[in-house]
Length: 601
Image (cartoon, rainbow, N blue to C red):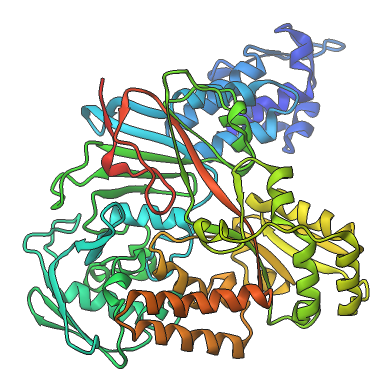
């Protein structure tokens, strides 16, 4: 790698493009200066470059004879070959680092992306000596934040977690009911305070050890420990105990008639006892579960999954899934106008911008959830002023936002769920009414800070411009994945734009208010948070589904009416898939379900 970097450094410094392969004048001292080393080390570098067939060094002999250097490989083709070879070795980040550092002014980046896109999709290949393996390989533009169920917060992480681990129960979205998972049966007492689960026999972790009640007890004791953002699920847990080798009993201090739904969520994924005796750091480098796929590789640039051939619930057809994590700035270049077996358009790409064959299958799903603006109720300033928040709601007309930005934004939002938004009248406030509302709030021209993840940058810019047109000063801060998880940056915001996917419906709705790292929860002022938790407890104590739904709707209504949250739009998920790929559908997390995919030919 170092040899390659030195080659392109000298190529750029001494005009290899202009030379066209002909020798160029270069002294040893000039070479040393370009390489930031001594003349002696420069000689060693030249020797290595000659051995690799990259240059020809012609030292000048005698007084007045200049030394010459000939470059044997064109820089662009050399960079492309090097980037491709690194990608084939799984070092995708290295490939992009090379292109960013040395590819400026060339077409090598576009050529590399075109080549790389040909590697994506559904392919038969040899993996670890096994021929004819059915592999699904596709790019994403977001890093894995965590594979720890106790800490999971994002939909993509949750989706990958569901491939590696299983839960005691599963919610069958199509049937609208809870079905057995690792537990083949379960029961509760008449008060909804004691829950007992009976585990399947012969369920094996990926390392070959059978799962028992001790693994389940350890998982939930760990989940409720201090510092786990998802411990809210066990807020009323008194004890969890093994009542036998394959029987687990939970005892709660208060009724929770949704406890079985809680255990369907990704946060309830079952881990091995004591993390197989490993430290937290060591275990999370390659965790094991009982899920349909086992983790083979986890780096900043790649997640490789291999099928669990002994999966108890039915072996997936796929032999492997290879998820390539590309730099976020590659998203537009790598998905527009390039053929692929599976290609998803998202963000701000319209259907017309995506290149797909006429016989490709198009699948779409309206996302069950909402994109919203959330005010920081814990930062002093205008976010605390209800009249000001209501004036901003008049400014941020969801209809105008959806019409002007388009793309994935297919429905103006006035509620968490799309079906509820359709019940609201779409009324646009006149400019005069907005200015009067702002004047009543007493807004004094102070600047507000809007922090958004990069994926919401267009939404953030539209919001900042719209508010600016009414004299509200907004500083927009687009944050990457590292920054969006920084508590200091999040706390610095007066407001943010975030989205929620109700993958587990009411459980995810509660998660939105109680998760210790979710903006919708961390931005709640303490007294408001206390009231919300009380409403949630009322919901959990009710056996009647309609009553539970009413308690949660009361929370949503208050947050909307007092403008702690301003709903913006509902998203549509879209994917085009090669006709040979069958069984593809969106899961509740908004990602294609790997277990169901198979190849027709």
